[in-house]
Length: 142
Image 1 (tube, helix red, strand yellow):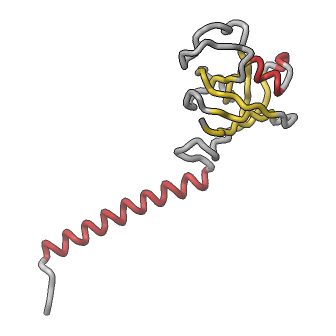
Image 2: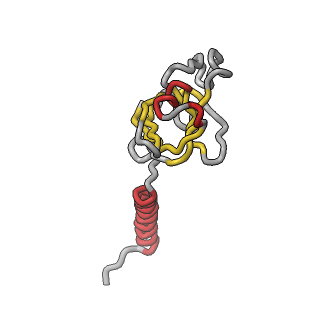
């Protein structure tokens, strides 16, 4: 009877099992991303719904977290985690108006808030007297 030495057979089975385990973990991670609507890359799938607020007069001319000077008339926004320079489309959930802004600042975030827009950007979506509006944020790229 031909047989493989026990030590070599054990190593081959161990390697095959380790490879199978790694592939299973990778497949499960990919399936989880596809079903949850999230992705390790924010492009395309990142579209949270929440509230947008605005900021302007008290911060105009000050340095933002990205190092540039804040201009309340520019189409910019603050976000908790998106990379500086990322362009996003913000859509008012009530009237369908949208605006494209560039992330150049950070904000601590208030419960339910997903983005803080410059005064000019907010005015494209709703009167600033509203203060806060329901929105969807879609990442467009850099």
